[in-house]
Image (tube, rainbow, N blue to C red; front, side, top):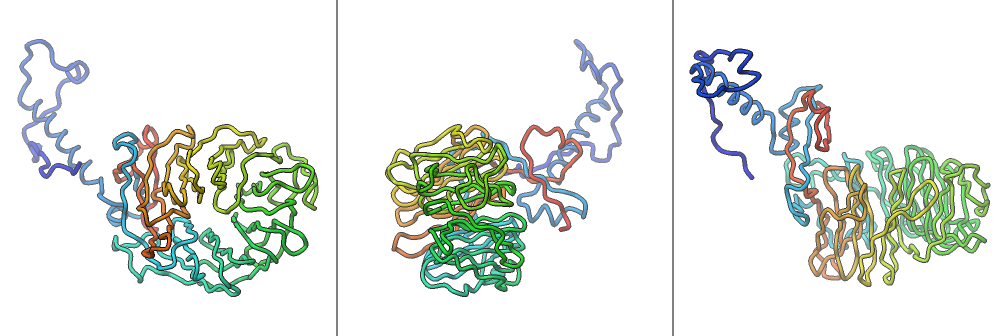
Length: 439
């Protein structure tokens, strides 16, 4: 609903009002009491003053809010859950249209990076374009892949470093300048990558040294440790303390399909991978009938791990407790389809499906598998990658051979009101996202 066009004012000079006595302020009117006109003017004056204050500190979009605030102020985005029915997803400006389609997207909030499917073009673009409509001036840098041949898989960024997985390689770039820091040749297909603040992890087929997992220092490209899952490893994610991996059933004694490793050392639960056995209780192996066969399908918030099993016959998302690897909840799409991608923010889990269903599903993390909303692409599109900065989700898609592939940005379905933060916000029952002004 748009705000009303007329803001009511009353006794704007404040000349004909007086404060009611303490009894009436505490108890209101008594039976048959005739209040002085100055008291009614007092009430109507302050109501109009507060209405003016509220309307002057609420903004139609984030850029307007930040432009109006002073350095040191903050803007708050209030999300009123339930004001819209599930399914009401508001599309905003398109980011990029590319003929070959999008293989992967990621963001740190300031930059959005994407990797094209068949051309190997990798770029960073401005996540907060000022004009409201994206154009080529918002392209920040292109990452030139040193050894690209034919297969684009995953791109990840933390704002300082961007890493691209393609063919048998994972290449580290300076996220801002685009300079290549290290081109890591795994010796076999690289299927997924993930980053923490200082390290990059890659997983793939059995490569050089019969290794399926590698930990690499982002600043230099130096190897920290390597690991052999005992079968092709397709997906990974990290909470900084642990690395979670999933893939085909291990050829080791555990026959694991999903594992938690020590991120610093690569140590596992049973000393199977060539590093050592962990002494931590929350390092584990899990044997699951469902199998992962592609990347970008594992995410974690530290307490929970979500895995989208990408086999068409068992298209399921599982929520797994990260302490012991136990399955806590699951969701079955109930169609013969392929899971493409998962992404999370502070409250939501986003799922994208490839091929026939072409859906995005938004779940509440804390009540998974409860669904917030769903959206479906056109018949010529499939969703292949999702990332989120907490305010919006950026979706990479391809056109199933029809061309016109696009990079789209969606709002989350909750309507927002952006305004200046006040001390009372510490008691606000709604979820808030704060953005400092002057940055």
